[in-house]
Image 1 (spheres, rainbow, N blue to C red):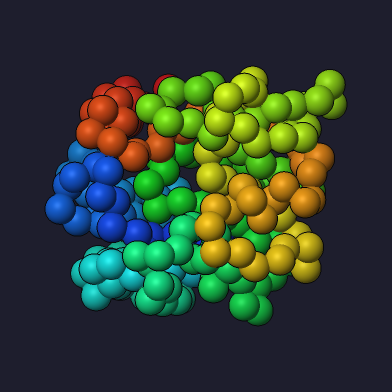
Image 2: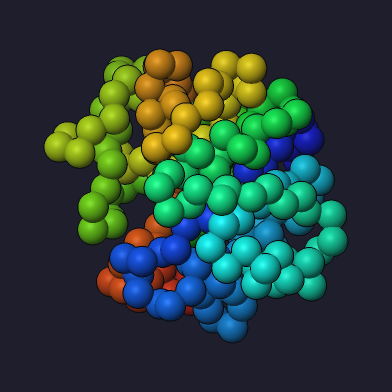
Length: 213
């Protein structure tokens, strides 16, 4: 069981245009339930969850409230011109000792997510490269991330990070850019699927149906 010394910030503001589903990725169907509900099911024991909304905000809020009523909502009204860093930064206000960044398009193996949240200290989630356009992470011999790159790296950046709130400086583009000045940071390898494209979506559905393995 992990300590509740962190705030979960789920970034769900974007349109998800690359997927072409006609809705924000938080609302796409994952085996009978919206993706955001699949995420919240894994976070049942977490009592400080902030969801950053923008595109189709009312639909996301209504969907979440029907599942649990203690989630906090934060608006990123500039979702058309900003990235996940802007959403994550808006969720940081009055956060606990650690802030956990979780993208609204990510499915994570539940056991791996629990291990990640229970890790004693800062960490970043990495996985075997699988998506169509990954951001990669270069590691040192201590299994810490020392560089993000589009060209080289041993693991793929998953968008999942647990960082001391007081160390974070707000940004507007990508969360990994907020982490670059803080490196090196420990990396945990996790089983996960990110959904950016239709191809990613089909892979994620098959993976979820197979028990997230």
